[in-house]
Amino acid sequence: MSHQTSGNELDALLNKMKSAVSPVRGILRELHEKFLPTLDGKVADYIPELAKADPRWFGISIVTRHGQFVEVGDFRQMFTIQSISKPFVFGLALEDHGRDDVMRRVGVEPTGEAFNAIVLDESSNRPFNPMVNSGAIATADLIKGRDFPERVSRMIAMFGRYCGRQVHLDNTVFMSERLTGHRNRAIGHLMLNFGMVGERIEDSLELYFQQCSIQVNCHDLAVMGATLANGGVNPITGERAIEARYVKDLLSVMLTCGMYDYAGEWAYRVGIPAKSGVGGGIVAVLPGVAGIGIFSPALDPKGNSVRGLKVCEELSTRFGLHAFESTPGAESLLAELQPSSR
Ligand code: GLU
Image (cartoon, rainbow, N blue to C red; front, side):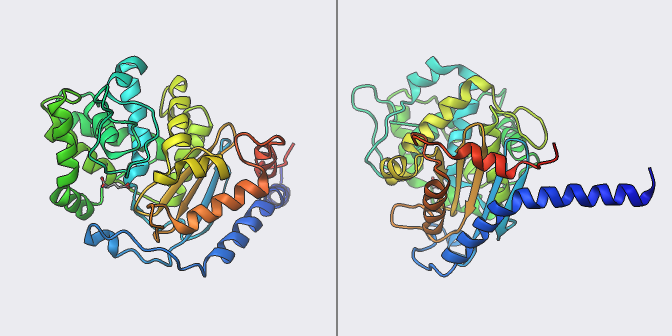
């Protein structure tokens, strides 16, 4: 095969890929342009490091379960994962203990309470679900390891499998989280009082502060979402991040409890399993299809990224992505993103 021919073949393939990806890229560009001027909301400021975020940052990334991706805007900008870590650590706890044992420590009921409420289910003393701080701390307490360093490295390694790269903490955010985390400590000790967590609660809180401080970008979030969309296997590295049987556990709690006190309305209007964090990220999962990562740090009063909500709402409507859509559109999104080389 001459150099000329292989060059032409490559061009033809690239063109085919471009034409397949461009309608979705076009829509992402359009949404990015449309919502870029939206300056509503406020960046989180409960610790000074988060207040330094630039409210103009805005990135969107979609990664399919075949590993194709389209992304626009500030998709490389790093930020801390914060509460988006919660469903993934819940997954590790499920792998470590199984469904029944985990359910003894944390429920799956949505709560109308704030994410950091100091409240447990009165009849069972369990935290309501793994997406609120109490449930996430109880979940972090379940992560196994011979000692604390091993528990932390298992948690970090798990995020590395989802992202397809080694992940790192933002040390300044971590130090501030632990310096100011009195409310989370109070929650931890209340659960210790009720026997919902063990004596190693201080270590578990430390692990929780660390998981919140992991640095990701919007591309990472989309790959993490795509991994769940792909039955637990990272579509880019081919590495399994979580046992297939637990993927639905994560997606269910994301759908019912993932978006703070907006979770019910989110399920109603958008209908896509998702989790947001106060760093400004949102991960959303179209099962069997793709992961979506959005980053825009200005938050609404409930703690969700203002632009992130708008993008998801519009994507859901335009493509018919709601889980209970009578004419589902998610497959057509996958078809559009697939290189048409066959
Ligand atoms: N580190 C935060 C806390 O525990 C997480 C907040 C969030 O993203 O919801 O308060």
